[in-house]
Length: 454
Ligand code: MEV
Image 1 (cartoon, rainbow, N blue to C red):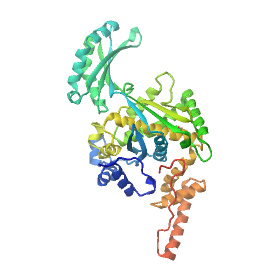
Image 2: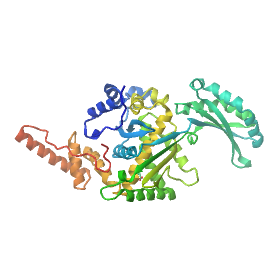
Image 3: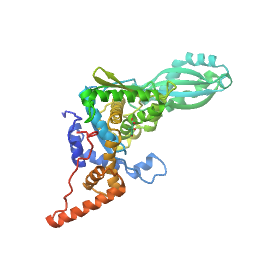
Image 4: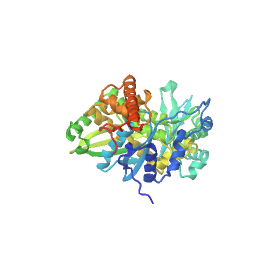
């Protein structure tokens, strides 16, 4: 019986193979399973060819893990697929601060999705509404018959709502069938139901069938995350914790008052959420569409999270719709997505949503703390320097060496990285001649103190 932990000090300093070994020990997933599912991106071109059309190959992205995540008292090592430097380290670092205050507290709605059926050319909307509501049990039974597998797993149609949209001349009726999708994201199930009940609804309404599709504004499937961080954890070299709390509360107020800032604030949340959604084979476009529609539900686009002072500490709250699956879809065929669920140690779609949203709140905390203190560029540029070093041709341990040089020179350009690389090559060649050893490049600390995860 392994004791699952998400605390792996010094993780960022070791090699990729060593990290795989540490994650295997911490999660109970076999190291060879990790290698098999992640080497070459886990997806062969032949399999990709069955996913989508006109395939030429596959496209790789970095696969990392966020550490220190504790949700409702349970530790999770959380896979993230993302191309942006510093996102993974920043989330790990913020999760560590939250963990010290008791971790994330998550609350999840039942996995209810909305199937929409549009009915047009309805002559008498009130009469049609009454007829549909009177046939509610019949419609729900018809919906259930269309998804027997879901019903066998304990899901199925739960409720029906009728809405009238538009003015008298072009009024239309929209029927919502509310469906419990259990551990599926549910898009296919919901669309199947919409198509199965549409004709009957049109006949009850005396109208014509329009669109039959799920709604990505799945506001009956929300997740709510709370966390509390002590001032001491938030302090930086130059600012005490109380001043950082004030700065973060100001950042939150700014987002609450201004859609221009709210969009960027929410982008910081989605940095974390999307990376987990992608790693677990889920539909991030659906998640994005739902998140932003939810953010605009009051008529003003607003932040999905808010930060407030709670005595001497900082309290964070995030609420968003999150339709994720742990069965079906991409998970059937993508070994890396299946591996992600095992590493994360999530057993249901609700668990996964709680973990993904917690990583979103962690990413948001890291961003607003950096913005309220040193500014985002310091930590960001230090990590960006590694991509620049790679672009300049640095390989293996040279990447850290070159990145350290260009950060110190405050010149993070490919040109500067090329110069640094050539200096390193000259030094290495000299050392090899004098010592008969070609590996003299010093390992530099790779991550700035503002985002480091250990
Ligand atoms: C960058 O990917 C995300 C941030 O812009 C988020 C924010 O401003 O809160 C740093």
